[in-house]
Length: 164
Image (cartoon, rainbow, N blue to C red):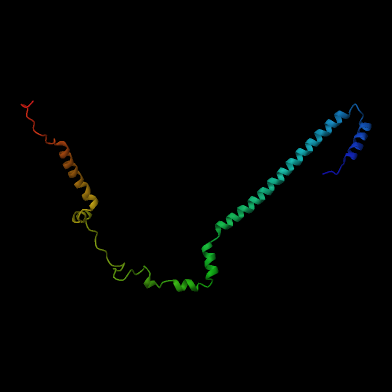
C-alpha cells in the first residue's frame, strides 16, 4: 500500500514527538488509530459494495443466458442445420391417403354410421368366465372338503372293555 520502511517510521515518530510533545502524543496516536479504523471500515464497505455489484452483474449475465437457453428451440435449430430447405422432411412425409385420415384398408370409413353399442350386460353374460373368476368359486369348495376331512374323527381301533 504505502511504501514506508522502518527508517521512515522512525523519522515520523521523532518529528511527531517534537511537534506534538510527549504529553499529548498518546492522545494523538489514539485519534490516528480511530481515523485508520474508520478508513478501513469505509474501504471494506466500499469493497463489499463493489463485490455485490460484480455479483449482480454476473447474475444478470447468468439470468440472460438461462432465459436464452430456455427460449432456444432445439428442434427447429437441428432441423434448420440438417434440412434447411425442407427436402428431407418432404421426402419422409406420407401422402394424405396413407395417413390416418382415411383409415386402414378394410376398415370402415370415418364418415360411415357406426353400429349402436351393444348391451354390456348381455355381452358379459355371453362370455365364458375368465380363469381368475373361476378360481375363487372352486377355492371355497376345496376349503369345505378339507374342513370336513379335518372335522371328521379318525377311526380308532376297537378295544375290548372286558379284556382289561
